[in-house]
Image (cartoon, rainbow, N blue to C red):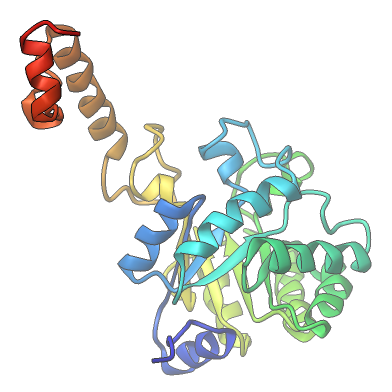
Length: 282
């Protein structure tokens, strides 16, 4: 029986029907499998893993090779969810040709079914060239973490009129360039609602209010994996960091006390070997 996969067509249909799209990040086979089992529509192999999984201060150091490596594991786990590869810093900014080449590698080597590119209308030519080659592209505007040094930190964007007008124009240009959806990150909720109403393609919010066509969050924030306080736009649904540490602490305690392993975690010898050991014949 054919698998009913999430596609760009399906996502557009969801917007038209008013059905909310759900996205979450993943970085390996286990995290991706959990996301798909939970019913996540879009699984993003986000460059945020540089910060949440590697401990980097930002997303800039992660490479295309790193992202392809993680994408392979995520793609193996997802049969229904649409896997999107996050194009890392300097893998697409040089030219449209570079963007297409990098995106092609993501699909061929990483197994993803689309890529995400940060930036507004200046990236329209790169998005157009990539989509013309048959590669789905998700746009990303508002707070763009790869431009963190230029925009002056992780902060809300377009809170005043002129930047808001620019952001609206960015969204329109990305749609015209062929993007199948646009991430709006850390954008005032009323502006996100307005942009969503203007576009035919879905908007996916992160810190952009509830009127977007969908939401995406960094899974480590949602499940409390890192132990750090989540950003304002995130809600912690579990505290796995504490549970993980507590489990390991109990393991350490039992090993040191000689309480682990017990017979339940051990294996018996065959009759001939046991007899030889008992008779001290070895």
